[in-house]
Length: 313
Image 1 (spheres, rainbow, N blue to C red):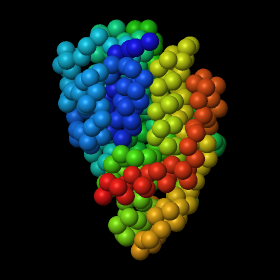
Image 2 (cartoon, rainbow, N blue to C red):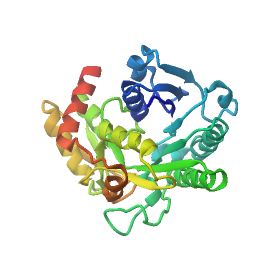
Image 3 (cartoon, helix red, strand yellow):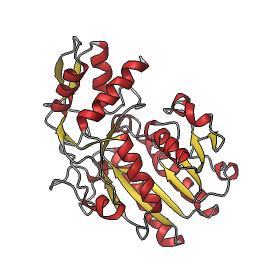
């Protein structure tokens, strides 16, 4: 059944892939992005689609609701997602990630949205005592970014409890793939690939033995889409993660091996403030409630991602 769907952060890495997927399913999609980190280039295909409308707007804008049509579903992905930037500017991160979320929830309520799916983060778990991390593990922020996602999650719960709105929270772990931005605030896979393709040193924070639960962007989209339609899951919190954990050092070595002809080497820098030592999630709840399991293994996903960056340089 065709729906009218809002995607915030639509020009971003994950958001643009989600937009493409929803349009391919036949839905009408409204994309919102302030283009601070999102790129119009990511929406090149969507812009040519008659069922796509793009609004360059900030999720903190109180008047945003007046520019939106009647909606069925909201996927709220817009955020400042950098731990490093949150340490440098916690106020800016709080404004976008917390105030922006409240504003989107308010708009969703006024527009009669059936369900809001929110992309939270594994950062809410802090430094977990048990691995793999299940959704009932304690939440404890190690960084202002983690704190902002915890606060946003609580607003999701509060709108469900107060207004009866259907909400689902997805805790994304380490997502990688084509279109991920490359900057000092980017994810580790993007940074390593881009530095290797340029022949620059791959700088590993600390000893590199911190672990990550990597998941390819196409698998993230499949899980995210299912979260809006699966019955009886309102109020649930679900991990979106890879099936296996890898050390950052292993990721760096895999990138060097697959990029092949590169002069890059691995060097170690100081540990990064707010960095999580062990990040490995449990997929059991996602499999049970969403019926989706990641299909792209790391080697396959890394090969696709390297090829995309190579062609984009």
